[in-house]
Image (cartoon, rainbow, N blue to C red; front, top):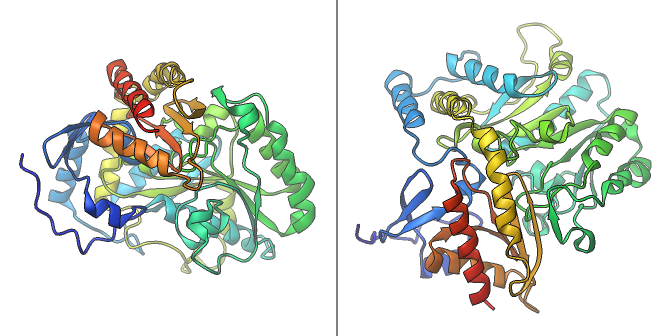
Length: 440
């Protein structure tokens, strides 16, 4: 395959240093199972499931066939006032996997839309109950909840917020849970830090008064900020406090949903049931954009008021429950079940843990953490150039080691597809080890 001749001038790439990228573009031309093929014909091991999302591996024939068949049958149908079978069938499959009475599914097209939808559903719920004054949201420092104005408001990654001016006005943030003194080389959940949840009761609730707070939103595992693992008991404590004061608890499961921790959802891994949770990414192996919110029955029922001919929730998207996305979801869920991929992720996560912690002691490594099929290695930032060392490691892995990694500042993350074999994880660890020795 010859290198593609592309005009790079028009496309403004997302979350990409565009000037640097266009000086030496990294173009992926095709993919199959665990590998991408670049436009110059090199095989690139996918160590990141695309972007935390291709969990069953690339171009799986069952999903491809389902989407093709759907295109031959129904290319698009609106979900406003009419619908088609796809979203009903997909929602049922998702509800069957969800814990407790989380049985109602509202479809979006991305995780960002899912977060903004969850926040709006929370507001609609309280208004339906006659408590419309409950409009304060509590997020966390270093949190990533997508890039809608609601998501960056409750999110806590400074770079995603600082240039965009006015955000949602009534938002506060808990501190994040990472403490390098206690968490530097943790395998799974850190034993220290559950008490950090008490800040919700000790500082946040007294400041705003519980009667004004709509919801608390957290990622069970903070992914995009660099794989921050919750301390053991932390999420349960948040649930207890929310119950005590009557606050909704929202989990952002866009990254953890559909098997990343070896269970359908992180709520089942941590044995903590939220009131709403978001999903996207792995719901249909990222074949066609889809996201959504899963809601407890009681929240849905509270909104089902007024004359039956009137829309209960004035919200939705043209592509909510898109036929192709729904077909891909059904096929993906079949693959997960038939190949037992969630349990496979749990087993391979143990091998990833052993491999990634073997990198301790290599140059500049200051922290290693993991949970399920997620592993992160943090390197010391260069003085005056935070993120530069991590970025150079990413580039070295791509160009010289043949492995695609994910980098967040100076944190390099692996989140491989669940079909990964030991040889693939060995290759990832070996590649990162070489890069850590090379990039100084």
